Each structure stands twice: as C-alpha cells, then as structure tokens.
Image (cartoon, rainbow, N blue to C red; front, side, top):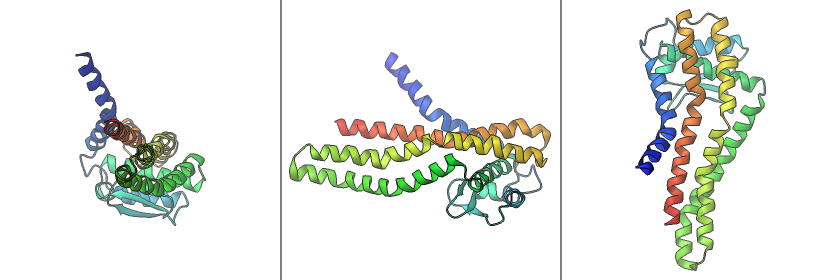
Length: 227
C-alpha cells in the first residue's frame, strides 16, 4: 500500500506540472475573441517598440518559442491568430525572450549554446544505443554496457539538463520583461492582469514540466538497462 501511494505521488510530481501548465493555457484561451488584436499583432507591435524590427513573427508547427538563431518569434496558430488572453500573454512572453537576446542576457545565451551542443550529442547517443547490442553480441564484453549507458545519457540526459537550467530564463522573460510591457502599454484589461500572471507562470514552467517527463524516460530506460 505504501509502495502504491509512493508511486502515485511520484507520478503526480512528474506529470502534475505538465497537466497544470496545459490546463492554465487552455482555461484562458476562451473566449477566443476577448481582445480586438491577435497575439501575432501584439508580438509585432511589442517588437517594434523594443527596437527589434528585424525580428520576424512566424507561425510555429510545434510549440511557442523564440529562435535566437533565426531571430524569430514563433507562435502556434491558436496564439498567432487568436485574440484570447492566452494568445496575447504568450506572445508577450516570447517577445520577452527576444529582448533577452537583444540585451545579451547571459542565461539565454547559455541555454542557446547548450541546446546547439545537445543536437550532435543526441545523435551520437542514439547511434550508441543502436550499435551497443550488436557490439555486445560480437565482443561479449562489459564495454557494450558502458557504451549503452553513455549513449542513454547523451540521447536523454542532455535534453533534460537543458530543460532544467531554463527556469531563470523563463521567469525573467515572464515577469521582468513580458509583464512590464503588457502593464505599461495597457494592452490588457485590468481585471485580466492577475490571470495573465498565472499564464506567464505557466509559460515559465513549461520547460520544467518537460524536464520532469524526460526524467521519467531516463528512469524507464535505466530500469530496462539493468534487466
């Protein structure tokens, strides 16, 4: 019984933040026509006001994010074209990242560099995981187990590490940049300000929620490796 309770608490701790983030963003995505302007239009106006006319605003096929290499704020279709509180607040959050890039904000630069490094590391790790069983069959030595361990860390652990170090960057983008821009420009209804703070907090915790799920994947992989 204690084991079951502990397992439930562990799963709640891992998946709880992700569920809360998605719930918060969906909650304030309605009504979809709460404001006259769209998230994309607000992002464009904020970027221009911040002297970032060279930064583009584009649709994202996946998640909302700012790409410091392409100098582009990318928003999901619902936030780019939507007029909800979520759409406007998320757009402001991503513009916050663009201003971090403009100001050479050190934590963002570190995250960007680490993200670049993880791409080849993940490919190398995946290759190690693919060939280590073959090596084990051929050599029958402990070297294959070590290779699999290293491959698992490179393919799964590096992404988790990047996610874990992003919280300061996300909190700064939300509360030191996006919120002051929204407040100063009077873009939101006063009654929406507390709700916007909840959305910004959810934006900041998006990567932490993803890192917790990644940790679960590492745990599952480690359990398989030990069998």
